[in-house]
Image (cartoon, rainbow, N blue to C red; front, side, top):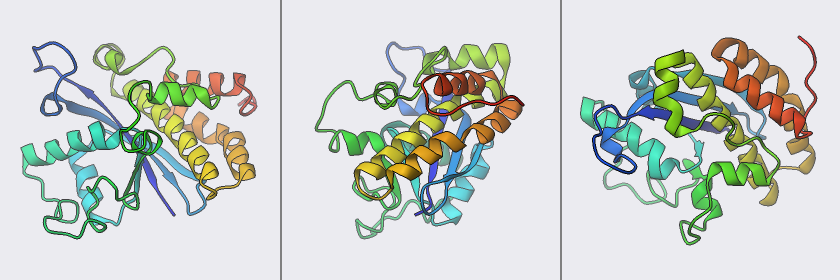
Length: 233
């Protein structure tokens, strides 16, 4: 099935407390999007800063998401943005719907496959299951120079495009973790997964030209790890 892999980056300028800020304090500064076709091949890699347009799209289509910890962070932040701004999302907030029809239901993987939920048995496994750890465990770059705590500084010093490039690096790691998940579940062949790794170079290079250096560094590490070979141009 087609899925859209998403990741968001946020800043919390109003948060004055200690520890990780609660969901209502997060302001979305970038949304990364990676589309796949029915067999799992990547067809689009892009980012947007228009949160309202994204939310309207999200409720106007029969979307199937894939995230890493999206149920715990990304989607609650987006949902709170809709609540705070009075954005109508009747096809997403289905009060009274049957559990298997509700896109927000924790166990409805048809509408939203959260890979953290999947690999921790819906939270039964505690600790150590970050995207960085799982990505590196299957020979992916994971986090490099930037992580979520760097976003505010990156936004101030280098702007929205570079933040979006970092966001797309997380989308790419999530995508290849998604493919490995499909492979383990018998829904994707080993050959397709290997082909996807080898064929992503051109699309990532195009995205690098548009968004910025974090994607360049991700691709360099991706190739250094033997996933693909980077050509000139």
